[in-house]
Length: 339
Ligand code: KG4
Ligand code: ZN
Image (cartoon, rainbow, N blue to C red; front, side, top):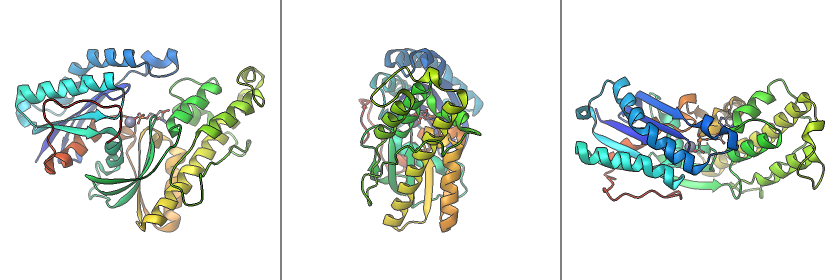
């Protein structure tokens, strides 16, 4: 049995988890900062860093306590060191380095997006690899070919906004709260997804890249009038707002599903995994599952608890990095960019 403590502070969630053998989660404590950022309509980096400092010790202690662990039960400490807000990442990285030194345990660096890609494998009885992975979060929209947990090739990515960013920006256009993804999902329930014909940007027949800035502008002009950026929302009824939300959500999901099907066709694989914050969207989960079932492909979505940012996926992928001998030094740095 190999047990890792995983630490995650890349954005607006302070999280720590204890995971056995890269798959069995013993604890996963998430302290969300959403309430602190809500009034600003997005994550404020300085506020995020300060909140991580306040929460990091108690979050780690709680994760260790729920898992019924002492330092002697921990074999290594995994931490997100990229990509993300550097000031936020540094809090987790510093905590992990300190514990690594004080407890004399190996330090393992984990890429946040690759951890999202791995997250669908947590709790599965057998590994789903090789698979095509669709990772949709607030900062990234990527298609990966996941050969093994430590061999992951990028197939395509967004050329502008990430899917979650588009949800957040469109929610703001529609006067909905931050974070926008869950609000758009709520507004879309019982609304008409065919009410508005928003663009599905494909960027060429064989392209696995994404673009979501066009649909965001299209919603903006639909609400305010062509070329206008404000003044239209007050004239819309609640049910018109809900129909716009549902039509936007449907257009984004159509593109995500179509590109994922294309990635499977291009790679010749027959398994799809889904992860990242936007993977919490049940219409997306259902649409991808249906598309995979129709083709008799296997489909695994990350469990809800492992979609938005969490320490469990960091400890889980950290286990495989450790097994591959990828041990970080105590001068490990944080980086805003993906590896
Ligand atoms: O993975 P995550 O927690 O943080 C990043 O690594 O970015 O993803 C956060 C993103 C936000 O943009 C949020 O609006 C979106 O995930 N999100 C959703 C849903 N829940 C969270 N998007 C659509 N539907 C949801 N139910
Ligand atoms: Zn994330």
